[in-house]
Length: 360
Image 1 (cartoon, rainbow, N blue to C red):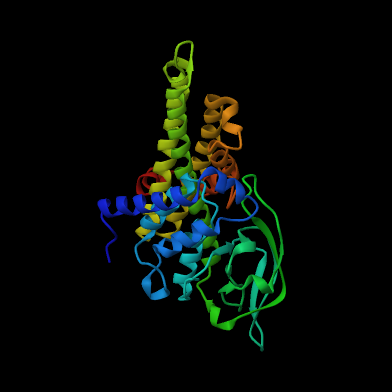
Image 2 (cartoon, rainbow, N blue to C red):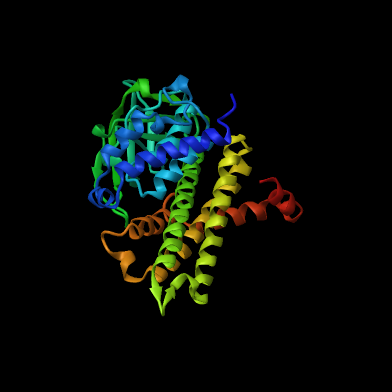
């Protein structure tokens, strides 16, 4: 089934923009630090946007990952404090792989390698720990995947957080990042399924794609705020945006925004066309590296142009830049993904370099 046309996707983006504008002003983002914006989630859910890109047969709204990416970008551009990206990328993919129903409420993913799912005579139990699970304290379900080993098959489960121990924590932007511990926790067997080995690794990769997509949306908005401020703020009798040094820095920011956006879009496109795992891994690695670089430079330039006002509680800028600083480190930092990218290229050999670059 083909996805929506460009005009339909533009309408989708306009709908999301209207919802987040109404439910996510700067004061609401500030109030939600250390928690989430339940009103925003309810409005998105009522419009079917918390399950966009998820097949209808699993309880989703239909569409494809391009639609999911469009929604995630808009919400990220408004610093929306909801676990949307986690649900629409790794959780949705996990449910598709396992044939499990997509959770109706907020959901997230425990993407570390520290959790072990195993079958017992009585059912399925979960052991281990994963640090800094996004929005763990507000999730109705936490997706856990175990690639298995030896005779133990790969398993995936949608776990009720009530059977886990959570230690609350936040990232720099005040978004919940909770340590999750399981000690023989019993998992509902109807929410467990065997999955191919490598599924857990693939889901961690999609977490990185989700963050790259969020960064792209937030950097675009940081650019828009900076251009607007530079056109309004006057110094020496003219807008500061007309000063050559400032204009040059804004042009650099625009270049980073374009590059980060292109890399994220290319990775989502690779995901949509169900690229070979190695190709998707390279596309996601490139996107996370490029988006991370854009995040750092965009935040630095935007705050230089805005000056002190960008750090005031009432201003939107710091809600975005603190997320950029946090998101660039989550689901693998630039250094981690750059290493993965380098290893893959070296392993493929010199003759495969150019074909690999042009294929992704």
